[in-house]
Length: 221
Image (cartoon, rainbow, N blue to C red; front, side, top):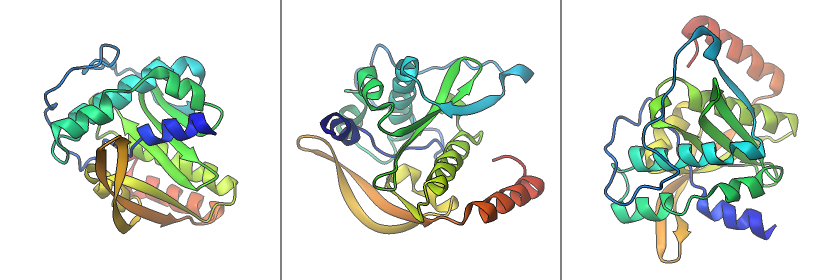
């Protein structure tokens, strides 16, 4: 659909992984609806959950996307590229795409701290974004596992992603392998360097067994 294609051009792969490090926000205007700080209160009843996104989640999704781009990508992209990437983010893009794509949010209490999007038609991970305030806590890994589970349920044998350069270590640690470097169009005349990566999916039963073994040996990541 034309709406989905327009949204797809605005979405680019990013995950706040243990490899990303702490990066200062690049200069440029801040989006008023996308504050740089996110208050998350740690309580026993505030455990993170991953669920399907609804239309009321659109603004929270945009806050996560804008903050993640501005704070985690400056080490790999120029201020102009960051502004082109983060500046146009609008909630209506996600309101329009909910129902067209497999879109999930990671929520702590009532706060969205990350989201992920999967295109089942192309077997592509459209996006994984985690708010910088929730980085290094396994949010991106949990979101990716949910996308992989959905992909297996639809009998997909593999997934691919156009990974931003700062997210490449995360995807490598999650079993993706680099295929080729490419440029991702953000706005007319602005392209972002990325790495196309692919991962073969294990059958659902074997993947579940491996996940149980990892949780026993390593804990939640």
